[in-house]
Length: 157
Image (cartoon, rainbow, N blue to C red; front, side, top):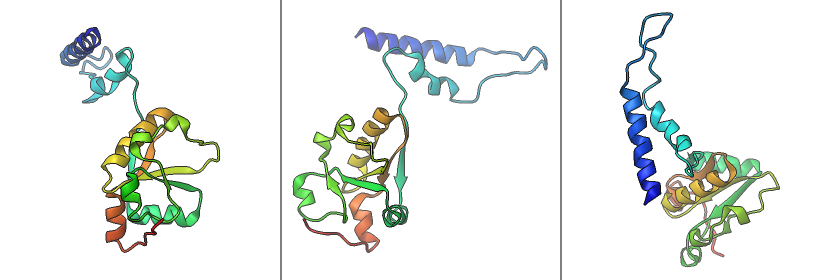
């Protein structure tokens, strides 16, 4: 409860600060920060809330190119039942409810790309991975549905 009050207080202060006029001393003109700056910085200003890196949506063509060039680790975050119906060739399975970025061995330098059925769960896993690594995480936008719609092959385990 105290954390939520602190959060609301911090947002109120930031909002009020954004409304305050300021003058550039040398030019005599407003020197307000860019629109949205206060909100972007709010996560850093609030104790206990860390900023997270972005999740990048890859198209089917972008994923295909990355897989063809090598160096990509593909992780399917769907349920075991969904995986039994088919996967993208070469993917490993780590269900979203078991997905813990801290337990992934990322030492081989391969880029991790996540996917699920439609892209929603892999985006969630991507947020976790990005928060853990501090770097943007990639996932297949549209998931395996987009992969199949593009005519790409799947394999049955």
